[in-house]
Length: 197
Image (spheres, rainbow, N blue to C red):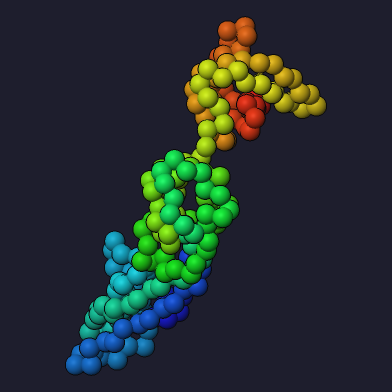
């Protein structure tokens, strides 16, 4: 069962700590040369769960063994209280070792994914950052005059246009050119929209 659990947790981030619970000593099971471990339907090796063990002998049997799966990883937490609307700086984040199985989904493990983003909801000191707590800052504002940069094989053309929507870095934004044509491109820093041909 240990091999089964290690194999099925190999892709998890951080250090995986596995603890297998005790099997009821009152069970009188026939001996089994080839026990087979399996995950019950709808479960996963995360936090407190169970792993099934079955044996296909003349007298088949199945038991469920309690297991604990801790995933210890560095998570990004607030170094001080942050208010909604505040931009996260390097000084606002620290990392700490946490058990991911005890935290909500979407916890950030790389500080670069938090720095420079805007806090949507207040964060207390020591609170783990989640992706849904942060928003990338807008680099293009609706109505803003933007620089269109078209790149192709061996050429680059620039012109101006008006942004039709707001956009964060890397988001697709629609732009009306000076001739009235609407084109889409990728929002970059400093009011640049990159259009690839």
